[in-house]
Image (tube, rainbow, N blue to C red; front, side):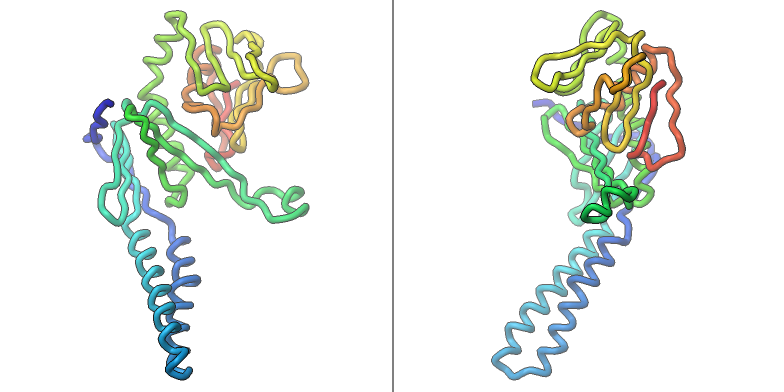
Length: 266
């Protein structure tokens, strides 16, 4: 097992937790707890003790959650990332040591049929890094400027691994991105629905995009996408995008967006 070294580079940015969880803690823990403590003074002694205990527990949990969120932050450095919490630094990993970046985007909608018809209310982004020790390190999804944070982490990690990955491709090796995608010097392959792989030569690729948590590859002259795979099952999906960008000789166009929603090649 390799030892994961802590990053020591310059700090690029610090992203603290949003106020949302602290507000929820006050509304659903602290206030109900204080309410029970207040009403315990109005009841007889037999019912008072349980109300006091429950009230203290709720208020205490709410206070602990607020303190934890006050301490929660992620520090992005030039050579890695650190996760901080109630106990101080929880973990740290260098970009070079993070062999996998896992990305998942989940659209939040209203319930029922109406939710399917209307646009999503928001998109929640979940990012985790896997070190050489195989340990998964999850980054919080409730950080301030989450779109900027996501872009910073993805850009730093992708840049750190691009040169080595491109060298392997140029040497004729294949790169596997989980079980779903395989990239070679002249083609990209994806898993068939009933098993096995299907391939598309690079000159036949019309566009590649990550939209709403799905990697989509369009083949020239085809009505349906050659591949539509959830990014959750494609580790280092943005490294795959960068490699395809360089191999196709096309400039990546990143539109104004929630970073979770779309990133294009082609």
